[in-house]
Structures are given as C-alpha cells and as structure tokens.
Length: 145
Image (cartoon, rainbow, N blue to C red):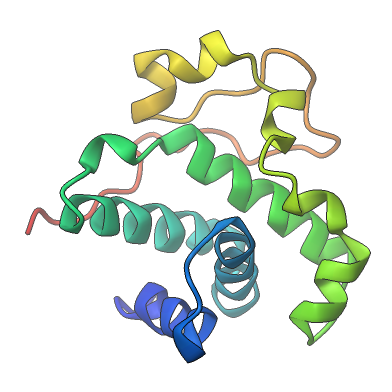
C-alpha cells in the first residue's frame, strides 16, 4: 500500500478549493476502497485521518470505530454499486450522506467509550446489513511524526 494513497485521494477530493466535509469524507473513502480494496482502505483512511487530526492539533478528534465503520459501510455500498463515477455512486447511495447514519447501528454511549475511540467495536443497536471484517489483532497504526 503506497504511503501517499490518502494524500492523493485527499488532493483529488478537495481539488478546486472545496472544503473537506462529510461528502468529501465519503468520496475519499470510496476512492480508497476502489483503489486499495476494503481491508487496505481501513488503514489508508484511518491512518490518514489520524495524521490529519494530529497535524491540525486536534488528535482527540480521531475516532477508530467511526473511521472504520464508515469504510465498512462505504465498501459494502461500493460492492453493491459498481460504478466508475462517484456522482453515480452518490446518487444511488444518498443515505451515505446523512452524517448520523452510524447512530442507526451505534448508541452514543458505546461511541463515547474509550474502547470505541481507540479500537474497533461492533454495533450495539442494530447489526450492519452485511458482515464486517473481524477485528484485526492489532489496529492499524502510523508512525508518530
């Protein structure tokens, strides 16, 4: 996995000076899944967001379960909607643009727990409509900079 996969996708998604909001997060995740495959996309997206949060002086904003859950959800929908165009993917999967989508699966209490912030936890409200990958023995990490 190239170390610059996140940076390349980030640059593509924010071209033209666009801000990096939820839609751009989904777009970047879709690119990572398509280019690297779902298992590798977990590391690309998680490590990239962790590094970006640390660089911005807000490392506490990184949330391991939320980052990985979005990769799992986007990857599932990407598999169900094989298209080369993000606009088509977005049109068919409009529910992904609801930032509160994960609250269907996770309670606020679980997401606030330290274990969820630092590692992968399965949903406690409703299971995903697909089988997520099992927890890796060691979560993806990036070198401290």
